[in-house]
Length: 295
Image 1 (cartoon, rainbow, N blue to C red):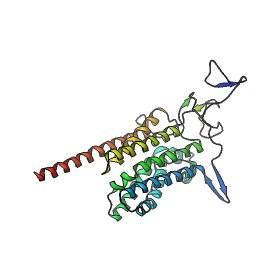
Image 2: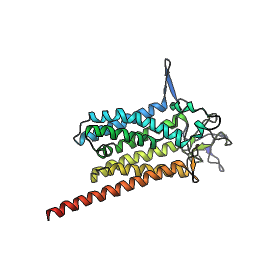
Image 3: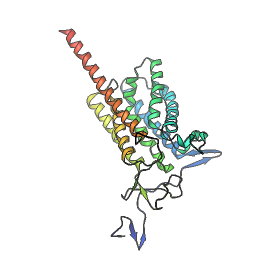
Image 4: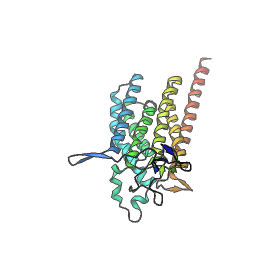
């Protein structure tokens, strides 16, 4: 293979060869009248992986693993509804309620469009309700589930690859993502051989790194009382905020000159830091009170 001296695109026998990460031309399969979408399979794979890891961590804490199933039965549907609501109402309301839009498209969830922040918020409310029924503090479950949440997000992000959506700015890097020029998501006015930053891959790798970090920190410091979940919020929020600030180009509501996800991600980081500081201070105050009562 010969390389062009002026272009990052490889040339083979004088013919430009496109280089990068190919997007799949397969997005699902049919079973009779039912269509199974790859996007849904990625989401379900993420949920299954999160349940596996969370159940293991829950059992290691001496808790009944059946409670995890009880929580998941309510938290997963609530999370999916919350994720869709976040996308429709916060990310791209004009795409569903603007001129020429069809609000019923909000029901076409298989086409993509789930906001993880909405999923976490609504899923957490459902988990709180179930935990309360079992007499378990939500913080106990949140700490057990935090690494699993990141694992689910890392796997679920690959659904964007199958849907050829939510990619980043054009790039000449060798791992640029190929997008079908015929796709409705391909930005107008760009050459057909344009490559894009694979933001789905960046976020997936960032989340996998978070899984390793949270497990290592929990093993080393035994972070409880909601502190591990607080670190989850910080880790995910930082990664998502950087991707939104510098890479993402898909349609999004803009607030004060920035994509709305920048502000919501910043909110996650600040919330996580506030929880971490507040919980740590309360624990220290309790410890000091116990020590004072002994003297």
